[in-house]
Each structure stands twice: as structure tokens, then as C-alpha cells.
Length: 122
Image (cartoon, rainbow, N blue to C red; front, side, top):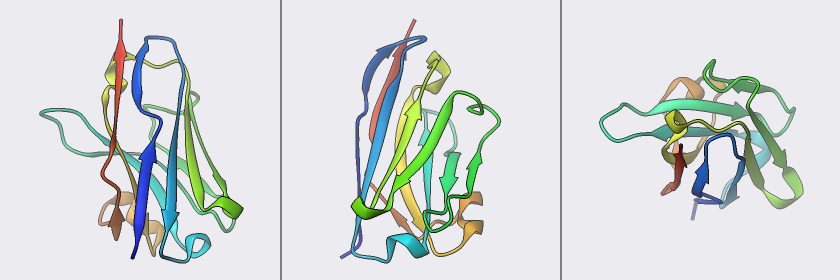
């Protein structure tokens, strides 16, 4: 069974940091693209960052460039999202997702986790 389990969400003040984890199982982790998406109430789901664990190629949305860093620990089948200089606008449910294609970063990911809530207060 394919599983993606997010952890690390919580409440943090503006300017603070948080690290999210996505533990993957049930599929060939290193042959997939793994991404982070987020959705705030009343807004559409937004792509945040993606990584190809096999080669380490990364993508970042303009809104998080310079503040967020995606990485993978291939031995642990885990992807991380280090979030620094957090802003209230970053408040959302963050979802981990996996795609067979890099194009999945644009939408249409194959597998999804259940999400973890990140709340950034002023």
C-alpha cells in the first residue's frame, strides 16, 4: 500500500522556522518526484516545492524561494521541507505528494498524504 505521512506541522511565530517531514512507503521512492503543496481556507491548492530524490533536482515556487529548502534522505524514504523566515501568509495545510513524472509538480500528482497544519502567527 502506498503511504505518504506528513509530520512536523504546528504553531510558530512570524520569522520562525519549522521542518516538515514526509515519510514514504509502498513505492519506488527514488524513481518518483516528491512534492509539497499547501492549501489555505478559501484558496486553491498551491505547489510549494518538488524534488527528484534520484538526482536531487529541485523546484520552488517564487513565494518561498530563499526561505524554504527541500531535501531527501533516500535511505529513509523521507523528504523534508525546511521552512525559515515564516510569514502569516504561509499558514495552510501542507500536503506531501508523489508523482511518476516531474510534470506532476504542476498538478495531477499520483499519491497524496493527509496533510499537516502549519499556523504562523504575528
